[in-house]
Image (cartoon, rainbow, N blue to C red):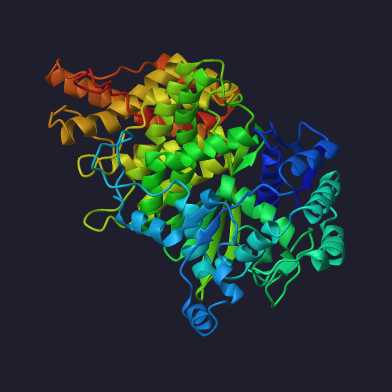
Length: 609
C-alpha cells in the first residue's frame, strides 16, 4: 500500500506528517514492526507500507482496537492558575491534562526530574565511555521535551496543542479507532490530501460518538508553530497564496498528532539566546527504522550533547555550521558501528539534505522567521558496501571541519565573535547550503586569510592542502582537477605558500629566522583582478609577484646558500597562462590563492614544505 503526503508551503509540517504517518503503520502490527519506507517524490512523500488496507484494520483489531502510541505523555508542573483550579476542584479533569488515565507507563516522561538531571550534567564534551561515579547524562530526547515545555514560546505548545492531540489519540479505541484509521488511509491514498474532508467527516461522525471524560477534546487546536511554522500568528499558508491573519490559526488535531510524532523522531531543536532553531533531515529514501536509529545515534553523540549545552551562547552562523557538521559526523560514526549488523540501508540516498527553521524572538514571542535547506555534503561515502576506509576518511574530514568552525572565536577573555569571524562563518554557511566547489574554495580562502592573520596569537587548525584538494576532487570537479594537477600551477602555489603561511609559521611559532620576508596581503593582490574579463590584468599581477619572488630568492641565497625555498621557472608561468586560456581567470586565480595559502605541514617534518 502506497500512501502520499503532499509537500505544501510548510515543509516542516509536511515532513513531520510523512514521518509520523510512516511510524503509525510501522508500529501498527500487534507483534513486531513493519518495514515502512519514506521516499521523496519531489512534490510529495511516498510512504510505502508492506500491507494493504484490510491488513491494517486486522492489525488494529489484533491490538484490541487501540492505536499505537506515537508520542509520549510529558508530565510537567501545573501553572499557578492550574494549581488554584485544582485546589478548588481536586476532581477537575485538569488533573489528567498531561497524562491520560491508563496511558502506558513506559511512554510517560517526568519532565521536572529530567530537567534536574540536565541541569546537573557536565556541560563540556564527555568521553564516549563513561565510568562509575560519573554524573548522569540527560536522556537523549531531553532537548525535544525541553523545546516543547520550556523554550519554544515559553512552553505554549504544552498549554493547549500537545495535551489536546495526546488525549484525542488516546480516546480512540474500538470502532471509532477503526473508522478513523480507515479514513486516514483514504485521505493519504492520493494527493493533494483532502485533510479538510477528513476533518469534516471526523467532526460529524466520530466526535459525537466519543465517550471520553479525561480531557476536553477539540477538533481544531492552535499553538502549533513548533511543528508547523505556517500556523504562527500573523501568517498562514497551505498553498502558494499566503494569508495574513491577526489570530493564531487552528489546525485539525489528527494531522498535528502525526506532525508531533514526526517531530519526536526527527527534530533537532536548539536554543540561540532567546531565539530557537529546529533542524530536521529531509528523507530521500529511508525506512522509518533506519531513520529512528540514525536520530537516536545522533542524540547520543557526545559532540551533539556538547553543542546543545553551549548553543545558547553562539551566534546563528556558527550554530548553523556546527549543527550540520555534528549531524553528519554522528551519522558516519553510527554507520561505521552499524556495518557489521547490516541494519542500516545504504547511506547514499537516505537523505536529500537538512532543513533548519529559525524562530526569532520579537517582543517575547518566537516568530517563524526563515527556513534554510543545507545541501548533502558531497564528500560523504557513497555506499555502505563495507568500505570502512571511506567512512574513516569521511569521519576525519568532518572532524576537521568541526574543529575549524569550533575554534572561530574572538579574543579572550570573552571570545566574542567579531566581523572577522563572521566573514569566515558566512563563507562556510554558504558552502554547506549550496555544496558547490566555488563556495568551498571561497571558504578556504577566507579561512586561510583569517588563520594567517592570527598565527602565533591563537590556535586555529590547519586546512591542509591534501584535504582542500581531496574535497574538491570528491565533488565532480570537471576542469578543477586539470588545474590542480598542472605542474606549473603547483610550483607557483608552493611559492605563494612559502612566502606567506610557511615563512610566517616558522618565524612566529618555530622562532626560526628564514631570511625571507613575509608577503602580507599577497592573496588580496592576486585576487584583485581575478574576476575581470581581461585576464592580462591578473597575469600582470602574478608576473610582478614572481619577479619579486625570484629577485628576493637570489639576493638571500647569494648571502647564505643554505637559505633556499621553492624555485619557479618561466615555464611554470607559461603553464599557468595556458590553464587560464583553457578554463578562465576566475577559477585559476581563486584556486591558486586557496592552494597557495593551504598548509602542507606534516607532523613528521620539522618544517612546512
